[in-house]
Image (tube, rainbow, N blue to C red; front, side, top):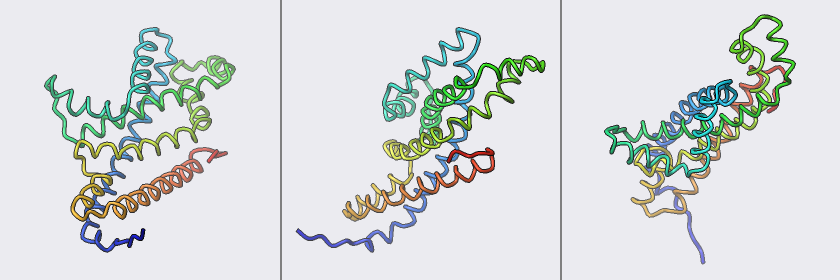
Length: 222
């Protein structure tokens, strides 16, 4: 059985692919920043002195980590309108990605915090620093460096998982591939090109994080 590749048939759809790549990058940048911020707050909540805060953040983490991302996405996009909260595809996709990354990064950052020697907390107290100051200035920076590779991997997983948001007609890269395939019936070429583009995005993302590590940490672990 022979098959002749016909990538030229996809040329008229390159603008759609370009727009899809940009949408994926934009989704990834925003969700990475907000997701890591949410994860940092969540890690602090999981280590809070207050039982209510620990319980609430623990419930959030368990719910998100033990349900499929596509169900979370559908709940936000299709379920919340029943409560009177209607969101656009872009808003729903962004919120779903942020909430998902926030839950996973909460546990990753928490692991880095838990590995911090107790002596660092005691040293901060002897300097007269508050618990919040100790957390932000002394505990958090080395904790981030300790778990940085895991955070990078999780951010890349979320970027790749953004393909799911095409199910609510958000016009990112996978949506562009589905659109081109439906018009040309070049399924092999459409999804092969899309796979290569996701691979390139993942590699560029990892290199960007590695570059950032050199600026942020004295001894980068990437």
